[in-house]
View 1: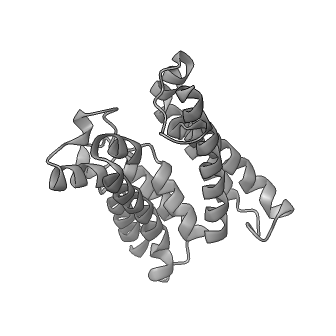
View 2: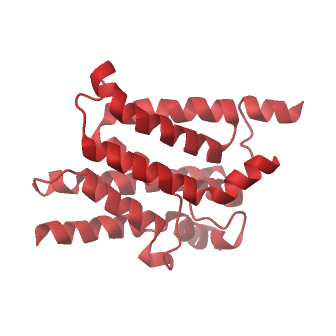
Length: 211
């Protein structure tokens, strides 16, 4: 019974639509009606600005971290990634926002943070470097997802200091999330092909646009 109650709590934590609530409470805007219509961090930055974007990013990461920490906090002998996945599903299909949510990236990062902080730092560095090179959050998210998934299989044998042991569940979840992230970014993929995908105002990609 404890398992199912905590699983529901994890889903509900993930379902908190940070971008929607921040937009309505402080800006009197529903971000689903502006920009890409997405409720996640990127569209929040675009529609509401830097402070709101950072706040939503931290909240979305925190959702994944708290949910993944539930079995530790309540002494439940279950792989914490199970609860992290519940939060990610809540984030992408939130009950509090008509089941239309974000693209799973930030909350997945929060799940990794709770599961293994060293692997989180490693994954964050991959994301930051790729974002600087591409200046596109969408492209960075997809490439990073692939590299992080490969890392779950390679690091336990190559650099165990970051990921001490191979966890088949982590790899399966990483593969599933990578596929899901690609599906959620299908419109972005088309815009990338068309050369119309928006860029962040920094990095090598942004410098090319300036030229």
